Length: 401
Image (cartoon, rainbow, N blue to C red):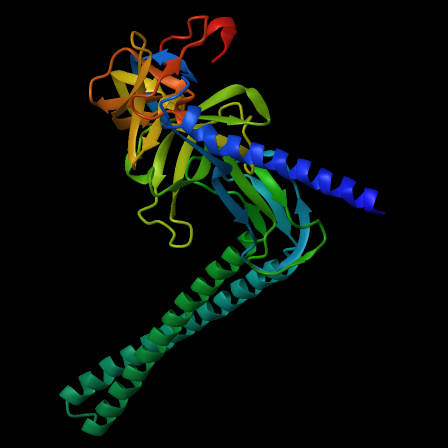
């Protein structure tokens, strides 16, 4: 029993000793070669400061909509007697695409014609009565001048003439009303023939959706089909607040879609929303894309790239060279003579994701692109045996970026 206890004590002592040694080595490690230390040199990779054109590209995702989409619907109720188009069919402006049962509306036309005829007959009757009243008034007036007819007879005759004139005017107004009713009946009858309509009569559009089948009873304004114009499509994207000031109407845009991965489509910004949504802090932007082959379809997912800024012949360094020290942005310049790293604060400009523009100060030489997270200003560096200095954005030996 004592032997086991002694063995346990020895094991605990050994484990404790090993743990202490590991702890002390870990404590010394930063002082001997860590960030900010003056001990062992840090192995780094470098790249030359370069001069080139930098394009800041905005990348967005969105979906396509047709330039024009409207729904064809009847203006009157009725049974759908004929539907001549289906999904995907081309149609022209003014083309007859559907017809409703017109028996009831044809009957209304006939009824309106009959009522107009009655009104016209009433006008003829009133005109005849008006003529007789006018002649009687003339006769009584002549007799009154000769003192043969009394004043009361003249007044009565004049009143009858006035009444006949009023009746004639009413009859004429009734004819006008019946003519309008007949025109309305013809209009309602024409509504049973459903046609497409848009401004450009020579332009061919396409049936997007079909909502009903032949024989259904339709209500006024019930959708029958939708008509789309996809010779030009509109891409809808959302732009974040940071990029919003950099956009303007007319900017060129390149777009790609999963349906045609090997093709790049061109478009331009045509509309920019004047407001940003409060929830997302994003604004809607519309991009118009010519689509003469009709390859792009409404509803497709697209990726858009817009050049937000372009600076030519500017000083650049790789994005991987940027470092933060004491809340300052800068780069480590590699002093290959003394094998030291010198931290230099910079003012970064635009970036294309690979290189970043340096607006100030003027830089030259090489910057450290890998290993600077272990460095402080004045730290020792160690370069690989194979020369790794290369222009900003270039490739190293063996094609390594």
